[in-house]
Length: 380
Image (tube, rainbow, N blue to C red; front, top):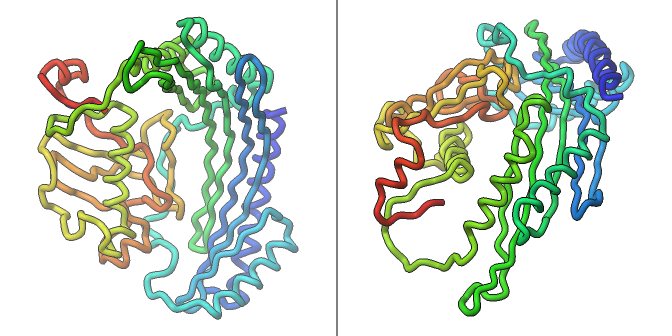
């Protein structure tokens, strides 16, 4: 059934490409200077099980057509779930009327034509086998993950295990001649568990300690084995038993892979174009200046094969490229859409829609080596 849905999505994509031509013809005839049409269609499945029973199950499909119209320096955005020709014509007419009450914005408009395009090569973002995995297989995977977690330690209390998949088709076309699409699949499993923290006496008496773990992949087959995910969740839960609040202190801090991801997201937000032109970031006027340790290099790479954030173009059709945000502690780039770039007098970095695969370049030492080199510190 999922495979059939994917085939229908492909057919729908071809239809939207036809409608894009209709939109541009209609929009320009009604007074628009430029226009863009996008289609996003996905099918999602998610199941959560607890104590061997299905607690929540969602299977859904959705589609969205969005039209951006630029009229005399004004921008209007209209959306619909109906991609019939009649609906498209009505949307355009409504968008043209809407634009007349919008403020003029000299920076609004499509990207420069030379910036448009799609990165070459297969980015490995779609796995057809994943689109064909049955609901029964996904439910069984969640059940196995919960059982594996409970079986590892008699103290474990299940807070639920889940399995989910998404199949997505994205199409973008504009009146400058850009017309591209890409498909993406994603899969994930996760489990949450708890254990009673029951010392004879102390501040943890009567409390539970809990944690979780997960695995994500473009393909269902690429997920970590359920035993590995369960083991990590149990390990993270048991190490909390007996924990006490430390006294206030000033010590070195090491971030684990989860919290470091959050930390990087804050840096990316601070380097985002809207934060910069609103002057709401500590990175304003810091391009080319040292603002961190020379050990820190942060990269946004949408061209990594088989990674969740990989994409051939950004949310407005700008060709994807690798960006070094921070190079050895020096801020090298902001993360910009074409609109943000115009406001700042810079060039777009292909980041309309946000970051892609954001990571910090690995250093010379493993986490274990870093920890062993600290006599007294904090591990987050």
